[in-house]
Length: 478
Image (cartoon, rainbow, N blue to C red):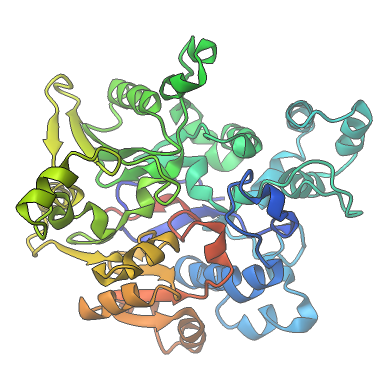
């Protein structure tokens, strides 16, 4: 199995990534627990899988591992085959080492007796299981046990413990920075089991064997658990949606609802100490559910093109449309402020500051990525109220680049799609693209400046876009 791991940008051609397809646990989220499990609503499992997420897997395979799917689409989607191609515990599963399914990897390491003993004991401790249940779990084979650990349900449909429905958001479990793997520390209890399973995967699966000494785990501060609740900033919590690798030397870290200042502090010190990067920019955003991570308010499309929520644009931050009185009164409000601080390894005591996101992103395009073209911003909802806020809520700014200029987003964000068209991008729906890729009418290598719109009625309820649903393991250098 190919074991190469290397990510130095957000837009280099994607070669390998980690994903997790929606499992039966999503179909068991109940309204009263939805917010505890970080969902805004309950989703319809069959729709989210068959009519939406499976198109994501198909596209990833056509782009990254076409031998697994090209010429087989009719067979793969034939009702008689019961979608077994997409089921990680089935013999007909696609088993790609480029579009890598977490459940499949977990099933493989759980075939090792010692790892199985440790993980069963650990999960049972977290979930407060009986000794009898612990014995039952030890009797399962690796793939069965992986399914139970993720969905919380045994094969006889008995629920043993809560599901981990956020496991589809693989961006948050860790991030590859050059050839290092930074593990997350989730902010919410609902994601504790995810972090445990992933830690065992990275330390024990053969795919990551040559990177064991390049895994970075953030330590807790020694005294945070003694602090009152308002001392939460001293707690170390970090999620991958707040980390962006913009060049091999430059990393962005968000301080948000889910990533604390102390985590950013620890991260900067560790990454500089290990010579992983030379420059780290910290972007402190309002702690609001609307924003959650920095990748919910901006992502990169090309060297010189970014998609962005207009609330954080230069025009809005500087209040260019306001009158003099409004500018003074509104300018004193603190809650919607964004603070951007850039540290350099050679002299962290002399940081640089940026007024707004556009200024930072333009600087990255011009100076880090050496783009000679004009830097352009495509705004959520075409920067029209109320569409900007509505479409940001359904992840208009959370796009995944398959290659520079070719990005995946949700089809429901009409005004953002309109903004892409106005910016000169082609727009094609996943249904049409899959059909044309299968017939050979379009080749991934030939695609340029394209927004691929994905079916999203149910997926968007889970509160994460395709940037969230991917953990890139390898991208080509820009």
